[in-house]
Length: 154
Image (cartoon, rainbow, N blue to C red; front, side):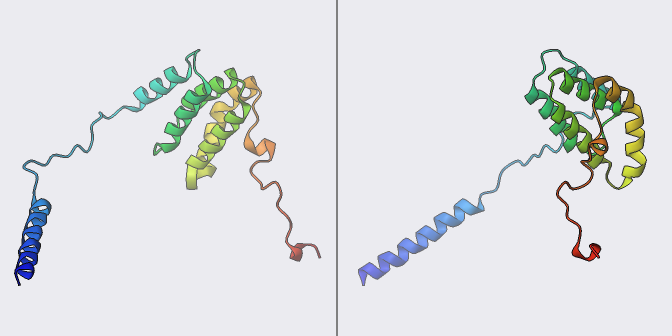
């Protein structure tokens, strides 16, 4: 009898203590939604250009800059693309230049037929100066091991 009363009291006390823990409310609630200032387009271009034009830049830093550009909402400005191409060529990383061009094409989205020719026209002198070919020139716009359908054989 005494044991059942103790078990009941223990369960009651335990339930009250756990309810107190979960019912605590913070005295003051504050949220920080935007902790950084908005950057103008010119400041963004200058920041990336200065970052990529450094002589002591390494492979990791260029890839970090490309990741940051890929995460942005818009298509990178041709000035930034030119600076990234020159930085990758300084490090003799041809594959990185192709990945950069593929990333820019992908960022164009549905307006690729409008935006990509404009960007290509802006960066074409730099591409020829550095000896870089576009992914289309290399055949990367089509699958490499794509097989014809059996319906197309006959």
